[in-house]
Image (cartoon, rainbow, N blue to C red; front, side):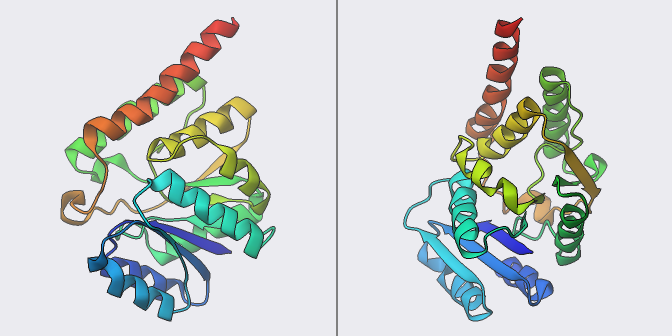
Length: 225
């Protein structure tokens, strides 16, 4: 297993996750963090993480694709689990996702219970899941989860999916639906620290980036009828 952690302005929770993962091969992609994060990133590298850096902030999708390309070259054929390093995902959950990928050879999503989310996140996630099912015919119980596992054979495809920011992860699910790629799910804890204060999600701009691909997907399907 290789663990991929895209980060922007990371705090101590990055090191907590790294320590919990133990001997796992960990690739951290710093997406243009400012100098205040330098100490945390340096300590992650001292713990054995591979540290890749974007000189400026390019977005989560760009960070993930940088990581996928590096892993495909450095660890060919290895399965990858992507996780958020802001305290939302625990090391044992990362390992469970990796185990499911290994058992099934499928994409795996870590699914949270919406009941434990702050109101804004609960409403947004519920709406997004319902819209996704309406436009694709596929039920995905948590389209916004950042805990995702992928077989090594998918890395080339993942690097080709369009999107540079938060819309990238939605585009992956839409492309999987279009191609008929099966998706497995594992249940994980719903963890939000300080009402998700560390999130870098810009409500209006990033919500638009997420919903627009679904509307285009629906329009393309309608055009083929």
